[in-house]
Structures are given as structure tokens and as C-alpha cells.
Length: 560
Image 1: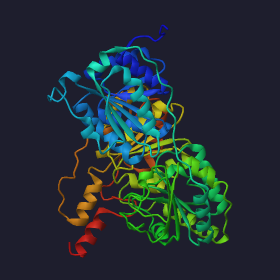
Image 2: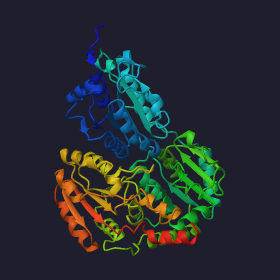
Image 3: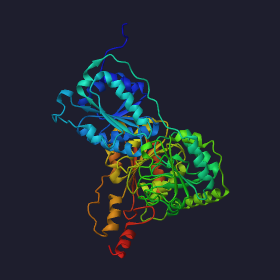
Image 4: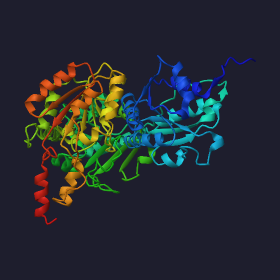
């Protein structure tokens, strides 16, 4: 019987495999090591948009953000050696954030392997600890098989990144092979016995607390869970940089359990008799360096629900471990009818304390950053996507911005600097109809500020705030705490950020007083261009709650 399959080169087979997986955006920096893929993507134009970035670090953040937003694997292409090294930062972010992602890396031809050829690296060894699976496609006819497995693996259980190396000869070779249909999303589900045990624990609980976090969520599941929690009268919090899993305006919301946590909320988590954790890994940032929940045997009765079986019992020994995806767990949870009047009063008190906690506090200088964030929180459309980077500047965003719906927050839970701006570029390209805001620090922004060129090239018009205090603030804070007055290596000589934005063809504003922010932001929003608003704040204003001088004085008094 004659085959109807068409002979294609490896690059075209790979491009068609991505189309079969439903990929609509891929990010990368072109490289000679995967020229046939670029040729294949040429024929996929109109169906799959390849976003050409200015550095692989920015491209990798865009791919990771795309994976967060869509729940489908974000796709990254980098060239071999230096390109792969630059792109590793987004892979690490995807791993710690449980984000589905598939990375394709050009590789030397098979005939050159193990000779330390030009830019040759062993990607299995390089990425082994930061990816779910790392492999190399050595035969052209197996490209569809490998791509299918990569997408299944990236989404199965606890989502995460997968890396595939592409030898040049594999891509140039030809074969007549069939495409593989879109990957299934595989998630475990709880048993009836586990749900009965959970009900029994909650019925006896006097001070329960629910903590949500991690990857693998969808909007419908988050909304259903919120409704169930509200009906039960339970208090709920979110893990580090997962604040958008629960409407922060809900009477059941108690705040985020992360860096700079409300001390009263931290104490309440410690005092919980039943701690129901859904999706979160319970990592260092969410547990206050493993003090809110003690390892390995928590004082709380810990119920840990997680899609990754390997995560259950990895650090904490739960009283009840439930291996389940969030959607499958919530489906089972909806069948449980629970409500306790005592819970409701406790929940109300926690929410009132949260409302008090998020009020901006006085700070040094003429520009009060907390008031700026509060203004944005009160006025931006509810569906605005807010992308934040890493650094002390993000503390104000976490504390004063109220997230109103699912997937309105993009942030790296691995604390990776340089994330916010490229993540915002990806957000605007994936959801052009939605408002997007990036919040960056001065040191944070310049790690990927060159992606302004990408935003301009593809018409990604959004507003970015750059909070300029002339220093690596987080490190300066710790420096003053441990070695007061001995400042070294943390000062920054910054450019004119507004002029920098204009040089790329964007819109630029500089703000030095609180009252000037609103009109500057409105002009930036109305510009129709990628826009940057530089906020010059007093360097002494180091966190929403304290100052550098106060930290220094306290350290000196303690004898440091």
C-alpha cells in the first residue's frame, strides 16, 4: 500500500509537530545550529508566531510566562552553548514555579559528538537537576515521538520544563513520518477514603487554614474552590507569588504567605490545628524558612494535596497526603458539605486584619511608592495582568496590590531578577486584548531592559514601572543588618530610564512626586507604545514597613 506521507526535513517535521500540539507562540534567539527549524517555522507563519528576542534570558522568561498564562507548555528555542547557558535562567524559573515549558536547543552534528566541538555541551548533565526530562533527538523519524513525550511530560503531575537537544544532522535529514495529535493532560485524582479522612479532620478542626499555591491551576477550578471555601466559612491564604489564585477582595482571604508576611497571619498559620495545603510545595519562601511549618513533622495536622507524588513527604510528613491535581481534588471537595460558625468569626477577623495590613505606611521622600501601588490597585481594570520581577521593590506590590482574578499575576517564585519586563511582553502578545503592567526595580529592569526592542518590534504596548533607588536594595538591606555602615558592592549608577525607553521608540516618563504619578501613568497608557514610567524613590525607603537607617540603627544597638 502506497504511503500518502510527505517527505520533510527535520526542521519542518518539528514545526509541524508544534502545530499539532496547538502551539501559537514560540520565543527565542535565532542560531545557525537550528536553521532547518527556522525554515520550518517560515511555513508555519500565520499559525505559529516566532517571537525573535534580544537575549536568550529574556526569551526564556517570555516562554515561561506564556506557560504560566496558558497552562500549555511555553516554547523556547536557543542555539547551542552560549545560547543554552543564557536560557537556563528561564528553565530554573519554570522548574521552581511548576510551569510547563519545552526548550529546544541546537546541538552539534552527531558525527562531532564528544569532541568538544564548537559550542558543544552535554545538555543532559547541564540541565539534569532543573528539568523533568532532558533528551537528544538523534534520528529524524523520531521527532514527532519525542515532541509528544515532551509535551506530555511537561504537563503531567507537577508541571515543569523539558529540554530537547537537536543535532544539526537530525534537522537537515529527511523522513516521511506522521504527526502526533495533541498531548493529553494527565492528573491523578483523590480516593473516596482520602476525602472521607479529610472531612473527618476538618469537622474536628477549631482553627483550620487553607493555603493555595503551585502550578497546574485553571480559572474554573480556582473559582470553584473559592466558592467552596467561602461557603464553608474557612480562611484562606496564597503561597509566595500565587496571590491571583484567590480573589483578594473575598471575605475569606487572609493574605499571602510569603516574604514580608503579615506577622499576625504568620502566627495564625503556626497556630492552625489543620493546615490544608493545595498545590503549593511548601518551599522556603512560603514557610518562612521552614519556621511556619516545621520540618519534617509539622505541629499542625498537615493535609498536603499535590499533583506530584514525589513532592508528598519530600520535606514534610503530612498527616494526610493526597496525590491529586487541583481540578480533580476540587471536584471531589465540592461533594463535601462543611460549615462551622466558629470558623466564620475567625475568618472575618483575619480578613479585617488583612485590610489593615495593606494600607500604605508613611515613607521617606517625596514619592510614596505604596500610594502609587494602591492607586493602581484601585483603578486598573480587574483583568489587568501584573508582571513583577524580584527585589525589595516587589514587597510593595505584594502588600498593597489586590489581585481580583485568576492569572492576573506573573512573578518568579524562585526570586529571579529580570523577570517582570519580558514576562509582560509575553503577556501582551498572548493576551493583546488585556491591559498589562510590569513592575521592575532599577537593577532588576536592566537585566533584560533590551527586550524593549522586542516590545516595540511586535507592538506590545503596555506600561512598565521602574522603581529607581540607585542600589541593589535587597542586598543593601541585608548588608546593613549584618554589617551596618559597611556598604560595598550595592550602589548603582543608573541611566535616564525615560530617555532609554524613548531611544527604543517607546514612551518615557520620570516621576519624583506622588501627585505627579497619576497624570504620568495616564499619558503612558494613552501613548499606544511600550511605555516606561521611572519612579525615583528615596533610597532609605527599603521595605513597606521600615527604612535602611532604622535597620542600621537596630543592628548597631544589637552589637553587630
